[in-house]
View 1 (cartoon, rainbow, N blue to C red):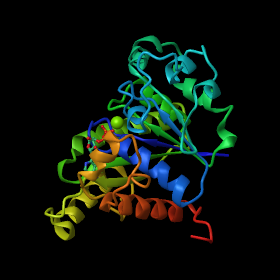
View 2 (view 1 turned 90 degrees about the vertical axis):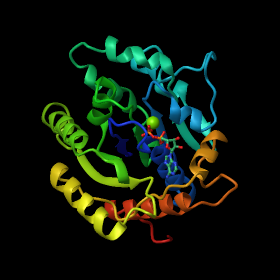
View 3 (view 1 turned 135 degrees about the horizontal axis):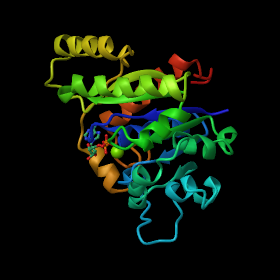
Length: 262
Ligand code: ADP
Ligand code: MG
């Protein structure tokens, strides 16, 4: 049975999509796990960043699945052995349309049928705390919160933790925050002092652990995205590639799923 993980933060540009892609790629290519990526951001960045151009095509997306027009398996695209449920701009009407009682459970209902085919299902959330994010939290076992190391907003994190608390109360009492992942880390930022203070503040406020691994900032992340590739399969090596591998190993250790052979 898959472990389901939301990558979430209502702030845009903090590396949610980059983390969903490269965490997923590491689980698959470096640790041999069966992975499904689910794009529930109407911007469709996850879909684009893996090289799928579905604009104007007949490709069904998560939107049609949530509306019960297609089954989820009919939407699945193959990225080098990773399964992907794509999204595009059509999903932007979901926030308006899915207002009936019980709409929080739509994603949970549709993932039910394919859950056992995977070890990990990773959901790339939109930069908001609306119905789509609530759907992701309702089906998830846990949340990973990427935070841009130098520009985090404590206020934003408080808001996020309030949303998580209300999902826990009403639709999913087993939901946990697995941890906060510092991203776009710049070497000039003094890691030992400022980061420790920052990490301390954050974990106090949202009651979550901070991953020891930080993801460093490098322009190769943008290059790989433009090429429609994850970092492992991109032709250039990068610090971020190493960091996402270390992060994935740290994660697997944490959840007790690091196989003997690694
Ligand atoms: P989000 O999904 O939270 O909006 P993205 O993952 O799309 O964030 O990242 C936002 C932008 O920052 C993208 O242009 C991406 O290429 C860039 N980016 C993400 N992580 C890094 C990194 N480690 N180093 C450099 N640029 C990064
Ligand atoms: Mg994104």
